[in-house]
Image (spheres, rainbow, N blue to C red):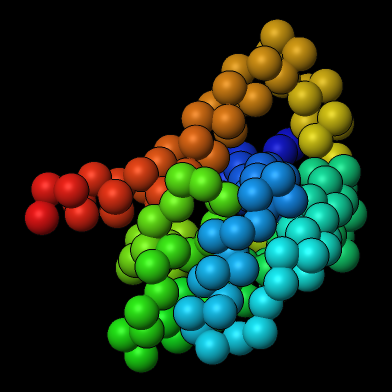
Length: 173
């Protein structure tokens, strides 16, 4: 089985969507705060519902659903629009609300990551080559464990770049 070269980044983006959605279900406060600071009405309950949708979308994409991949792309485009609007307006958004707590103010790294994730997911959806993760793992050495580790590390590095790095830069300044 030929696995498309973009599948690893796609799986990392979908898995990160699941993880971020789960974090927002658990702790919706930072997302609620970010939406309010942007001038949008927000309640924790609505944030939890939206976060649950993120989880479902990410899981559907990892299950090989083309519509799920398209929804992952749309999710990341919406996140990019929110971050881009905040950066362009210089809005006093103290948090992006991406991962629950701890969190950091949105940065250009957030924007670039969101756009890249949207592009990879759109590529997957348009190419109609979305493959179920279980099928990918079945064709990998060691039952896919190396693939899962690399994909997990990729997602974790993206999390660190968007959540921890901006806070460290703030402490240094």
